[in-house]
Length: 125
Image (cartoon, rainbow, N blue to C red; front, side, top):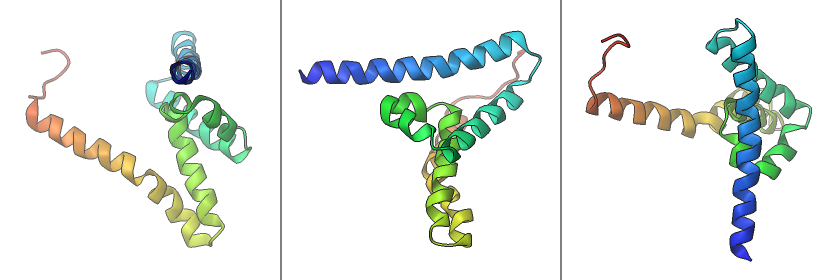
């Protein structure tokens, strides 16, 4: 029975994460928006959905399927800011930074390690 629960959890995460990625791919295919603009759009969508209270149920339903895409980063920033705002204005600003600090730090550290291991080159070499 435990395996069924785990499988269902994976399926929900795959379905929601896949749907988010499919929406992004459709935007890439049918618009002239750059990748940077699409990333910002998805992050702001995560912030807006969190502010409206719609992203938390999605996170509870899909877990990593909702938190791993870039919209999940927006959710993380907004959630940290809202929690901090309960304590004051300064915490509203620093709450989002504190909430995202572990993920950003890991990205910087692992990127640095990979830069030490692999030789960088241009795309056309």
